[in-house]
Length: 74
Image (cartoon, rainbow, N blue to C red; front, side, top):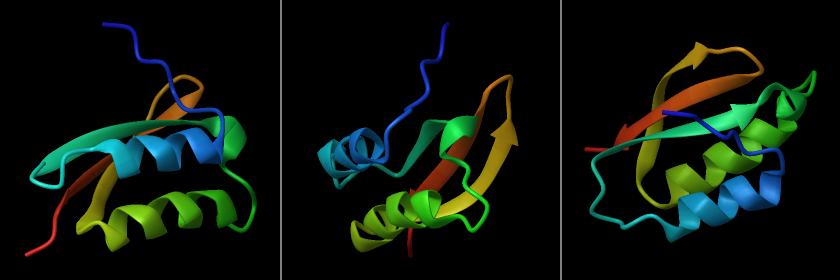
């Protein structure tokens, strides 16, 4: 399976907003190009996930992107 990471913050946020609220866990592939020195772009993405009731639990570094894992908050 080929993973195509998000290369734009707006696209990643739109994906998070489009997920079914009943989703218990999901992975989000984010390109290394979005990993800015202060983490602002990932903060924007994570803020949307938190607002929808999901929290980050981990990430795995892949070739050219990170695969972030989120789960529903209790």
